[in-house]
Length: 240
Image 1 (cartoon, rainbow, N blue to C red):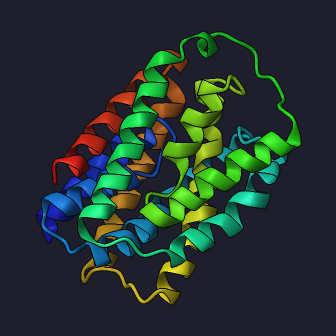
Image 2: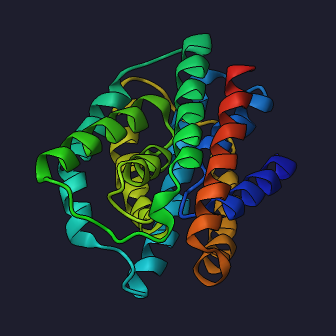
């Protein structure tokens, strides 16, 4: 259990450098450790809440979160995340769906280069609503938190820079994970034993990783690191 906590802290640190809570890696680590799929989703969502809570607080302190833009996304993503949490995928279907989504997201991150130095552009509200609903629903179904779906979407459509997408990901993950966990709980799934200890690791990693990301990671670096993380986690789940 202690070794697993250290691993969770390490992946939380890596993900926090690009504004993510680590849900994809949490799922991948639990898959590697042989957790049953019924425990993986609720555990990952709770760890997301812990890691994203700190990241959101830190980014808010530095006034880096566009709360107005976030409100448009959250209006549709939060109820969609709750509904997604009610959908239960067990075993191979869960790994196949989640892994495929992550590989697709990684490809989008690699292919979209023009946004690294481009200016943000405000899309129509209805497009933001559709994008938020899709990312939120996938968040609830997969237990990943939604940031890895939101960031590639915003970047691929040219709505924002990689850094701004990373800043929006933290609160998106936090609130969607909370709503997703509510749906998961109602659906009858509970976190794995030892989740309290794993949460400590997730928090420590988030604290260190957030500091690194805010100071030393560029837009291009953010995009490439996120793509590598998504690809690794996606392939790990597909070949589970």
